[in-house]
Amino acid sequence: MRLHHRHLPALAVVVLLTLAGCGTADEPDPAPVTSKAASFAELAPDPVERCDYPTGTRKVVVTTADGVKLAGAEVGSGPRGLVLLHQRGADLCGWGEHVPALTKAGLRVLAIDLRCNGMSDCDRDSPGDTFDQTKDYATDAAGAAAYLRANGAAKVAVMGASMGAVTAVVAGGRFPDQFDAVVGLSVFSTTWNASGGASTDVRTAADAVPKIAAPVLIGVGGLDTGGTITAADARKLLAGAPAAARSTVVDRPESGRHGWNMLQDGEESILAEVLVFLKTNLPG
Image (cartoon, rainbow, N blue to C red; front, side, top):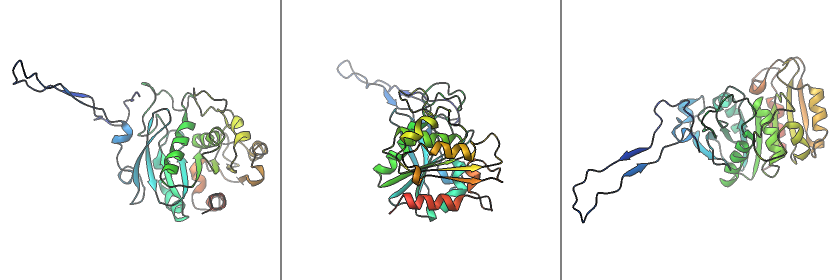
């Protein structure tokens, strides 16, 4: 696993300590002691200190199927899990203001920094543009879901914003056994690759939707020009979903809100619809 030099100025490095020899020919000097480097995710600050997360938030390190360590923040408890995926140019901190409403609804929330973003590790020396379609973000979502299931969640949903919204949809189709509901806030493209260079034929939202076993909710702001597919295109996309009858498009024609801002208070908020959708599809 390669680490990228990004956020932490004092990243631990491999240190060799050669012990001074005082032995004889019959007693060789001890071998050097090697201290393993810690990853960025392991060295990440506590989410309460780092972000606007409530007291009681637990710092989590998620290891993906391909060995990348992701920084995470877990809040709440119980059998109903929710993975949160951030937007482009952001990290898990952006979900902080929305976490209280989600946990109040009885959800156990796990927000992660996608690989090569925030405090998570990267699978290459030079991460490049985090939007360059070379990174397997869908595997990150699956890793977070697996973590929740291994730690007591019986049902798991995934909700993403913008770049995270496309990733949520792709993950839902690529790993259909991991997700019981999928929420995409501002799915900006049906052709953007959220699987990077992984060996899979499920790379885009268009690839994924016909394979998603779970119901899907897509949130659309009609005035979010260029930031989301249209409500009409979202409905057309979901028409091909196996769970089309239980899927929905929440359209706010007069709203220019994008991504997680669609959950903010006000007449344009879609938080109520999202909570009803999650409660319906994550029973228990």
